[in-house]
Amino acid sequence: MTSGHSAQKTLVLLTLALVLLSACGDAEHLTDAGTPGPDASTDAGTDAGTDAGTDAGTDAGTDAGTPVEVPAIPREQVMLGGQSYLAYQRPGDTFRIVCQEPCPIDEQYIYARYAGFLAVKHELLALTGVDVLPQMVPVDIHLAGDSLCGTSGTLSGASFMNFSESGPGPGSNVCLWDLEKSREPPPYVARALTVENALARDNQGLLVHEYSHVVLFLRHEFSHEWLVRALSYKVEGLAPTLCDAFNQQFAPTAWELCQRNGLDFPRLTASLVELDALYASEKGTEDLYLGVPRATSGLQYHRILDRLLGSDTLAAVVAAGELHANQWGDSALFTPAASTVQLYLGAVQWSLPAGAVSSSLQVESDTWRSGMALPEAWQDFGWAHNYAFLPRDLPFNQPARLTIRYDPALIPAGGTEESLGLYHLPWRGPSQAVPGAQVDVAANTVSASVSVIGRYVVAPRQP
Image (cartoon, rainbow, N blue to C red):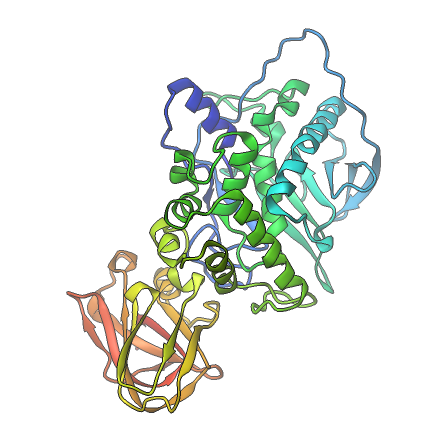
């Protein structure tokens, strides 16, 4: 994912106010399961984004006064993707800096870049409570465009994992494009490849950000953008608390969770440690990759935070707008009595007649990662209105009325609300149109009588 950390800090210092920049915008909308995701934070494997800022970073100065001494880092020649690289790494470190030969970057800068990140890494790990998983080691940090990172284009930074025939890893990558940023033309502010710049704390933000993504790789179905932004802003000194106004603009989920639920860094750390324990005990629920335990789900993280904070976090996440409600998950109790049960803050409503279920039944959200084939323009709409419930395809004793509220703002150009229908996606088998589905354009809802608990998607009626 990208980050304009240093750009933002420079502009803040210049204007003495928060600026309307995006710290990290995502250019890709693919999840790890190969399905379109609704926002920038749905990537637990590869992260790339667009740089909305206009500054390549804070320049700590190019004054050639007293030279700064930085320790040399052992290096070796390695082959990556069939190309020769120099790899700089201290024994036992989880990361290394790699440079494709012939390396265009002075070694003193590489040494300083290594030392600069090493100086703040312990602070990052104190916040995450865990380091990257062994399959992601080494985390290769690329300082220039090369055979693996390519050219930066509109990207400020990126992170992605390696894959082998046996599955994810070994190793992962962080792309920073320092060399290219040192040559930025106006109106960008180029950051010279000096030892001072490499060591400066306020130039560690992007690397901390991308490394934080790698910490989440495999463990969790999302490599949450809001979370890694909040971590990097804390380390960089831009936002010392999650309730800081800087997070309100650039990490709104963190800010909403702080304001509404009291989330702070100690409990954020505790939540990540618990998430890691779930993954390590192979209790994750999301099948993302072969050869590794299942990733933990959004609902599992939702439940961890709810317990730690003593309140439901769904409203905060929905208000922030970085995740769709179905990605965070929800649950409710169905009873034999006639009742109306609301989930997802009323976005989903079940009207249950008496005896629809024989005994009290806890209904949990299922993974959002299975969908139906839709025209490309409708894919984001379909993923946002994809609600799945457990127990999968459990029949009702009597039909229930299901009503799903849709967001008209997500209807693509040329689409109409009147074209919407409701589809049932059996666990095995093709999607099936639910007969008699009714659209209420005033209430922005689609409703129909359904015979089973399961997965339902609001989507344009198929020909």
